[in-house]
Length: 382
Ligand code: CP3
Image (cartoon, rainbow, N blue to C red; front, top):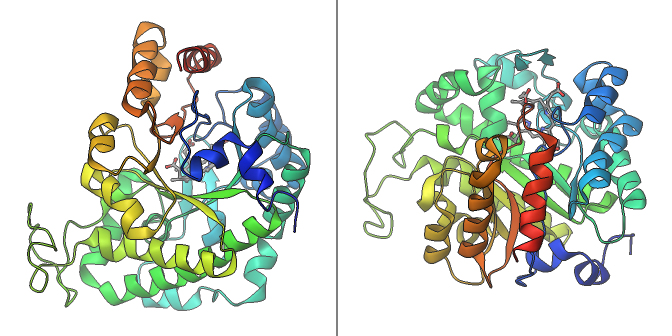
């Protein structure tokens, strides 16, 4: 068995024990975007590496920036340094990161662009991603034994929304418009992404990742509801499928988020039966978060800052593993407000399997001292 596989990892690594259902106190902690611009050492390596994509595809630099927050803060998990958009890049779409503006892709407006994408079984796709697997292997060898190594990818809808719209959050309307128009094309794109991302995560796990997180960062941009025939309908309010099993419209969260993620997870487990998987479904609301584990088969639900963690914990079985959800703006604020929110998260999760994290990525303006304060409060207040 490869290093990092087997039962030892679950005994030694706190975060893996929580993913197996154990309540561990103090909760293991990591932060989304923990390797990033709020760290001076990241900014220095980033300047040396050249472009952001050069950083992602250079194992030397990617290993270095992944380790930086582990050295500084002793987080319980390291997350592979890369980006969700290396996958569309590997499929042949042009991807650029514009300084100060974020990612830009050549938008996929219709069939013609879709037909030019590579297929998941094209060997050049995983040839393009080979540096990522090398980074994972080197990280597992270099990390302390007690540190969990997380791999990741974007969920199909989130990646599709970038591929269709060509850019980030302000411009997701094109994805929704296409989803409400040419639903068959969106289904085809989602299918392509399910196939490629399933294989991508299997390869990360085989290269040495202990667990993986699937980022559905744009769950909140899905159209509200879709009928089974595929053309748009009005939102259905509180009517649930269980209340109206046959006539109820299929909601878009099911069709384009939860079900594709469930297919990925089943595909991963067919190859790596003990794979541990976290799903972060940002913007899916209390209901959406409550549905993640039962409907996808994930081991844990990553909770965004907009969800009341105590309310979610009250809704889901006590055995459900949660992760989150400190507001990144509270971390910027620091002080008593920060202490109070750490305490509230601890109160909501006492005796329950929980991984401490933010409710979305840390932002560049966050003071490093506030991260230290957050961890001190967590580690003392357990
Ligand atoms: O430390 C980690 O969390 C691991 C590395 C990581 C990055 N991106 C590095 C990155 C991870 C897990 C991601 C995931 C990612 N990328 C998501 C899902 C998580 C989320 O935030 O919702 C999304 C939507 C992307 C796409 C993306 N990449 C955007 C929108 C941006 C620009 C936003 C920004 O902060 O500038 C990026 C760039 C990016 N990815 C940076 C980092 C550290 C900043 C780029 C830089 O250093 O110049």
